[in-house]
Length: 362
Length: 254
Image (cartoon, rainbow over all chains, first blue to last red):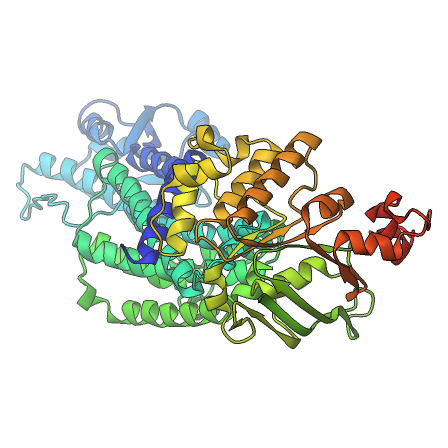
C-alpha cells in the first residue's frame, strides 16, 4: 500500500481540483492584472503636441517642420503665436517653437525661442535632444555636410524592459503567496468549523502525516496554478523568461513551502473564518505594497527599504525577477536564496510549533 | 469481561464566567463496560457526557484518573486505542465534493486498510447512495453514513454521540435496528442520548450523569423499579423518563 501521506495527498488534490470556483478565482485576478498591464505596456507613447510659429515660411524652415513632423515623437501644429500660447496654457499643446524671420540667413547663428510649461513637461530633458538633433540635421542639409558619426541601433531584445516584464515575476510571487496562505490557513479553519479535523483526529492519523499531505497536494496545485499564469504570460503576452524554468520553479517550490507554513500558523491561531480573514490580510497586505510587486523596493521611502527587503515575499519576488528578467541562475542570487531558506526554517518551525492537533481540532 | 475500564476520570475546564477559576466538567467518573453490551450514557445538556466520550476517544486530555480500552491505556497510548475504536461525532460534515464511496476509501486509508466501500455501505443500507455526496443525504442517511465511516477499522468498541438527535421516528427506529445488528456481531457500543425510549429499548445498561458525576447506573428495568416515583405499587408503569426527571430535576438546562 502507498504511504499514507501520499494517499491522503492524492485525495486532497482531487478535492481541491473539484473546487472549480476556488481555482477560477485564484487565477482570475492575476490574469486580469496581466492582461490589463499587457495592453497598457504595449500601447504607443502619446506623441508630444508641438506648436510651431513660422516667421520665415518657405525654404529651410519648411524642411525643419517636415523633419519634426516625420518624427513619431511629435505631433506638429503650425499656427500663430497668440493662439498657440493660449493652447500651451490650456494644456492642449506641450511645446511651442518660434522660428524667427532671420531663420533663412544661414551665415550666422540664429536664436530660436522655445515656449514650455515646465510643470507639464517632465520629459523636457528627453525632448530637447530630439529637437536639437532635428535642427542639426537641417543644418547639415544646408551646409551639405555628411554627419561624422552615425549610430546604428540594433535591438537584440536581450533583456525585457516593459513594465509587464517587471510585473510578471512579482505577480507570480504574489499569486503564490495568496493561494498558499489560503490553501493551508483558510482550509484548516474551514475543516475545523465543519468538524472534519476532529473526525480525522479520532483516527490514528498522525498530525505530521496530515500536514505533509496538505503541503504536498497544495504544492502540486500551486505549481499548476503558477504554470498556467506563466503560460499565459509567455504565450499570449510575449513575456520572455531569460533564466531557466527549473530555477524559476525551484524558487516557486520553496516559496510555496514558506507561505503554506505561514498559512498553517495563521490557521492554528485564528479560531473563526472572520479572524483568519483579518489576520490573513494583516500578513498579506503589507507584503503586497512593500515587497516590490508592483514597483521596485528602491522607490519606497529610504527608512522602509531595509524592512521591506527582509519580507518573505520580497525574497521570493526578487529571486523570480532576477531569474526571469536578468537570466540569473540560482548561484547568482545567494543572498535571496539565503533569505528564502531562513524564512522556510522560521515558518516551518512556527507552523509545527503551533499546529497542535488537540487545540486546532477542538 | 470488561472491555472499557474507567477509574476516577476528571476533566477540568475554566469557568465560563470567571476564566481564572476551574470547574470539573467530568468529576470522578468510574465506569466498567462489558464486552458486547450496549451501554447508554444519559444526562441533561452540559452533564459531561460528550466530554467523557471525548476523553475515551483520545480527543481531549485526561486531567485526572485513567481509562483502559481493551487493556490499552488511553492516557499513555491514545494512538493505539484509536486503532480499535470507531467514533461517530455529533458534527458529521465531510470533505466537499467527495462521494460516499471515496470517503469510505479515504477513511480506510487512515487505518491503512484496503476496504470494499460497497460492502460497508451495504451494512448500513446505503449501497445505492455510493456515488452520492454526503450533502445530498437525508438526516438518517447521514447518521448511517457516519456510522459506516466509524466501522472501516472493524472496531471492538463503537462510540455514538447522540446518534438519533434530530431524526424522524422512522429514521430513529431504522438506526436502532442498525445498532442492534452491529451489537449482534459482538461489537461493544457506547452511546449518549437524550431519548429515554432509546435508552430503554436499546441499552442493556445505563449510566445517568449530572454535573459531571455519575448519579445512577443499572439496567433500565432496575432503574425504573428503584427510582420511578409513581405509582409505587406498579413500578413498571412508570417510564425511564420519570427516572431521569426524578434524578436530575425539572429545571431547564441549556
